[in-house]
Amino acid sequence: MILNDSITLKDRICLIRWGWYSMSMATGGIAVLLARTPHQFTGLDIIGKIIYVFNLAFFLAITLCMAIRFLSRQTALKESFRDGNESYYAPTCLLAIATIILGAEGYGTDSCGPWLQVALRIVFWIYVACATLLAIFHNWYLYHLAMASQQPFPIAQLLPSFPAMLSGTIASSIAANQPRDQALPILIGGITLQGFGFIMSVLIYAEYQYFLAKHGLPERAKRPQMFIAVGPWSFTALALIGMAKEAKEVFPSQYIISFADPHSAGSISVSTGDIALVIASFFAIFVWTMAFFHLCIAVISVLASTRMCGGVGAPPMSVVYWGMVFPNTGFIIATISIGQVLQSPAILWVTSALTVLQVIMWLGVGAATILAVARRQMLWPEDVKRGEEDALS
Image (tube, rainbow, N blue to C red; front, side, top):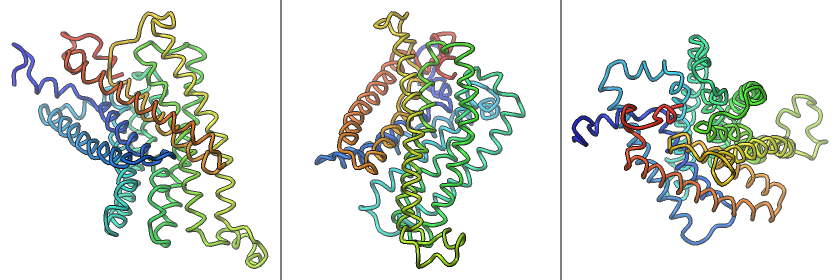
């Protein structure tokens, strides 16, 4: 299809980069959020299922476009990993898959037979293997090429380890409907990778804070990426509470305790699961505070660039705006989990209001993306459109 004298539809498709999977991440995250929001109403489940199915089609469409791009030129795949602005965003593909798995558990459990839980168990371990290999080899590859020198915004260095960290969130979601002998290793695997991802994030946060202190806020086009910093704290909080909640049902009552004191089996009334839930809840509140801090910093930084707040105006639409959706979804779900363990109606009502705002944000960014593509402000060659590099960085 010829769009003008020189630009074809295939040319535009070949401009799609790894970062476009962030749209699927965000859409799948919204479906999961609607399933977990505390105040449900008639029809919300159907709306969530529609969004979930739409995200499946969206994910497949992006994957097809990426396949067309890589098949159209033999070196395209290699170049995508050697470009510092794009390579860090390759893990968004696995993050999008994580939201699909979470949505399948949330919306498919009541609609499908026992086969779904078997499938989810298999998919979980495949995901864990892929996420672990990605974390090891992609990080090594980035270290080997000193890729950080090409990606001046350090918070993006979180992304290669992010899919592994989401294993904990997936484990907390699917363990409830698994047989006890299968749920136990799933929870232990989730805790293991959650710890890896969180510690990697803490190391990168130090560089990120140093960057902000030394160089100031990033340029306007990259400020939406500051919301990435909200993600690790949020997903750690919700994963720990979720896994500890399931541990109450899955862990033997004296699990680990009996190893420390074999004679304590009949003298201790508090179970291992109870202890895990208390510790996880307080730690979740502890890290939630940092998520809230980074959320506020990101919101203020983005607003400061708008004319409404005396700035020069928001930058042109690009895929980096989708970074404002997925991490915040994790923040809201983490807040829901904290409100539930604290049995606080006030917190749960706040999260319901935040859910509405988050859906509005998702719809707004989605509409702006459609308009930008239609107006040739996105997916248009650099010599014709402005700022394409900002969409990739």
